[in-house]
Image 1 (tube, rainbow, N blue to C red):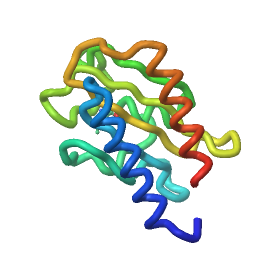
Image 2 (tube, helix red, strand yellow):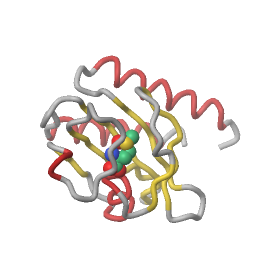
Image 3 (cartoon, helix red, strand yellow):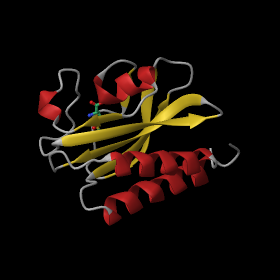
Image 4 (cartoon, rainbow, N blue to C red):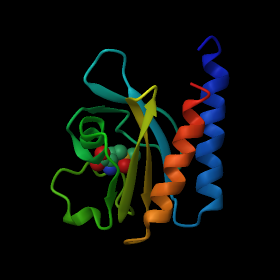
Length: 137
Ligand code: SME
């Protein structure tokens, strides 16, 4: 709150740790609602740079999660019609909403270069990560 840079640095460390430690997590980022706008803004990430730093609500997997408030696991991105491609190497994606005081304020987004790697263990684990992250926001 009164120390934005430190919070972003901590979020950056979470992204880098997850990417480094879990072999099939190839891109890890946190998107948050951009003020009062109906859009998400990329705050920090680990992995290749992306053009998609702003995503309107409803667009792509991330934009859909901003509206649905529910986990979205995509085993094969090519089978999705409402999907925003960031890199040709990406095969699958998982997006878990991040709640602060019961409100969906953002999400963790993970891309994988492996097809269908995500299980319920990833969902439970990333829900836990988001709960811990919410405490420092
Ligand atoms: N694939 C996402 C866009 C964000 S990139 O994965 C970093 C989507 O469809 O919303």
